[in-house]
Length: 295
Image (cartoon, rainbow, N blue to C red; front, side, top):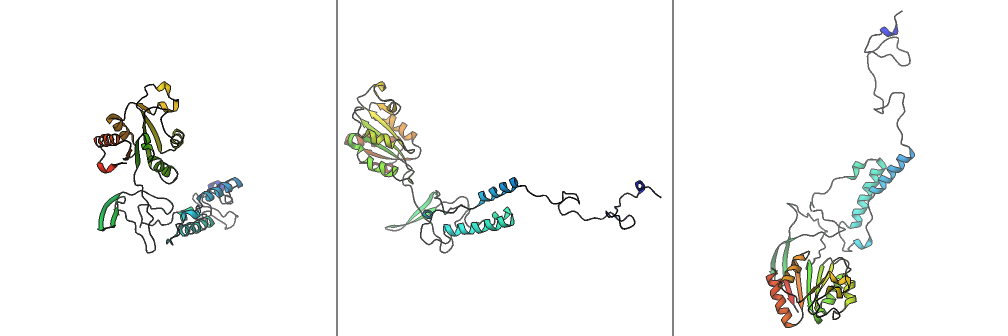
C-alpha cells in the first residue's frame, strides 16, 4: 500500500473521498474570489451599513427652492432637473451602483451654465440694429457654445459698475445717500462703494450715524477729508485710520482710484470749484471722461 505522501503532484482528490483515484487538477473558483471554498460570503456589520446609508444620503439631489423657479415656463425647469436627478439617484441606490450617478453629461453647454446661479460673461461686441435696439454678443470660455434647445431661454442681469467712487463735499453728500442705500438694501447688488466725504471739521460731518452703519457692509468703505483739522488725537479711534487732513488733491485722488477693488465709476458733487477740480484730478488719475459724473 502506497503512502499518501507519494501521490502524484499536480492532482486533487474529490473532497468527499469519492472518485477512487486522482483526477486532473480542475476546479471551480469560489463565488467570492478571496474566500476559501468552505467560507461563506462577507457581510457588512451594522456600522458599515449605517456609513453606507449616510454616504447615499449625502449624494441625494437637493430640492430647489420655490424662489429658484422663474415662472417663465422653462424647459427644462429647475424642478424638472431635480426630478430627473432624483430618479437617477433612487435607481443607483436601489442597485447600489454609484457609477450610475455620473450618467452622460450634456456637451451642449460646456460653459457650465447653471439654472440656480448667475455666472459672469464678458461682452465681446455690441452692434446697433435700430435706434433703440442692440445686438449684444457675449464671450464664452474656449470654443464652447450654449446649445439652447427650443423652449429654453436665458435670464440676464448686469452690474452696471464694478465700484462707485463717491466724492462729496459738504451738502454734496445728499445725492450720494439714496444711491448708497439702494445698493446696501439690495442683497443681490454686489457693487463696491468707496465714499469720500470732504468737510471742514469733524463736528461738521453730516449723517455720522448713517455713514457708520453703512460702512459695516462688506462692500462699503468710507473716508473723510477735513480741511480745518490737524490732529488725529482729537478724533475718535474709529475715524483715525480713514481721515485725511487738508484738501482733496491729485495725490489723494490717485491713491483712492488705485485702491479701488474694481474699475471705478466716480460720482462727484459739491461746489462748482470742487467738481471742476476733481474732474481734472480724475482725468489725470487715468479715468476717461465717460467714467465719472458731475452733479
